[in-house]
Image (tube, rainbow, N blue to C red; front, top):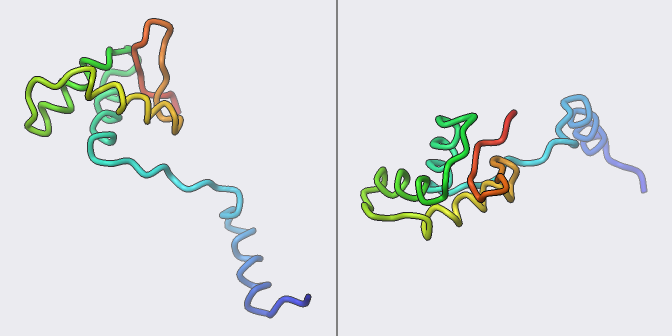
Length: 96
């Protein structure tokens, strides 16, 4: 089928801008963004998920939160490529 002039123009613009090869940024909730900011502030150190959970929990006004809160946050950041885990189970922000 023949493409309309508008479709052809839009495809050409997207190709020139390089937009067709980019993947969208991962969607993070507030807790995940705070965890990422904390890991970035500690770079290049690796920190435990308990420490991440305490820091994010304290920031959100939920004192006493630990690894049960921090571990899912860290795992999400690893799954989207924003953090890495070492062999002892500690996390750090991924290098850019």
